[in-house]
Length: 278
Image 1: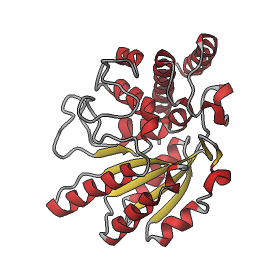
Image 2: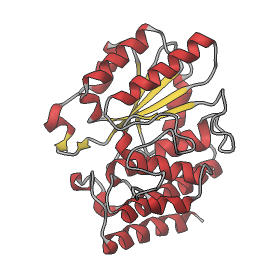
Image 3: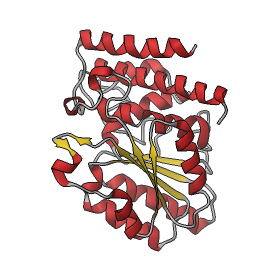
C-alpha cells in the first residue's frame, strides 16, 4: 500500500473513532471498547475493499457485511456515516428514542446495514446464508463478517463454521476481533477458545493471523483470502479501546460511556492524532 493511501486510511479510522466516542457519549451508554478495537478493520473494508455504493445501498451485487458482534454498533454507524450513508450528525442520536441508530444494527431502518444483529453467534450464521445464496445463484459478491473473540464461545459460531466449510463458501471471510477482553474479564479467564486459528482450521477454514491495526497486514490478508478455495478467518490482534488512552486494554470500558470530562479527554486525544496526519 502506498504512503498516501495508508495516510488517508489512518485519518479515516481516526474520524471513525471520533464518531464512536461522539455517539456513545451522547447516548450515555453503549460499547466503546470493542467498537474502537475493530475500527481499523471496518475502515479498510468500507473505504478500500468492498464493492458498495452509499447512494444505492441495496445494490444487488454489492458486497455484504455483517457485524456479528452487534454491540459494536457505534463502530459500524460511525463508519457508515463517514462513508456517506447518512448524516454524521445522526451519531449524536445513538440509542435515543425515535432514532434509527439503536443499540444494535437494524437493517430495516439504517441505510447500509445488511443484517440486524445483537444476539451473539447469530451474525456469522446470517453471513453464511448470504454466502451460500451467492454460490447458489451464481452471484460474485463477497461476504464479510466481524466476530468478537468472546462471541466465539457461542456454540452457534461453530455450527456455522462447520456448515460454511462443508459448502465450500470461499466467498466468505470472517474477522475475529481478538482484543482478549469481554464483559466479565479476559477471554481466557471466562471460557478460553484458544488456539483460535487451530480451531477454525479443524473446521476446514483457512486461518490468517494479523495485527488488526496495521492496514498493510489487513490488505495482505484479504488478498490471500481471495486465493483460497475455502472460507477464511482473519484473526486480528487488536487493543480494546484503541486510540483512547484510558480505555486501552481496560475491561471496564466494554460497556460504559465516558462522562463529560472523559469525553473531552478522548476527543482531545483523537483530534490531536488526526491533526498530526494533516
